[in-house]
Length: 129
Image 1 (cartoon, rainbow, N blue to C red):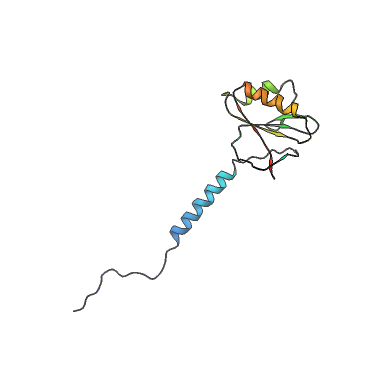
Image 2 (cartoon, rainbow, N blue to C red):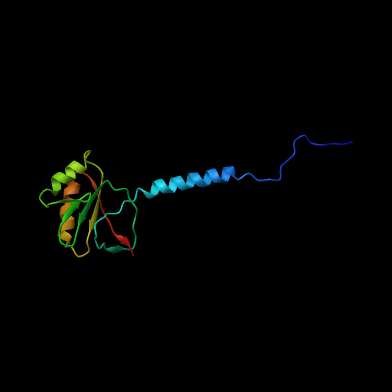
């Protein structure tokens, strides 16, 4: 009695589904890598034992010579409140503070107080230790 199957299994393995998965992973990592936007200004950030990547909405940079920048645009200390208000249109968001480690703490507290008054979350940017 000759039993034979109509469906024969091919010994070749198709790699097309594997390449689809690799391309999807590549696109995913390329898109998520754009969410981390470092400040283009030269700031010597303090070190921290633990750092968390957080989505930033507004970036405030305070350089060593006490220059203030909102989203890489230089502003004076007196106009910082109005610039932050216009950058935080809805009011709530995350303000990431890039501060040089040689800048006195009072400037950090000044910026954090303005952001807190606008009901925004404050995040201090640090480099990993």
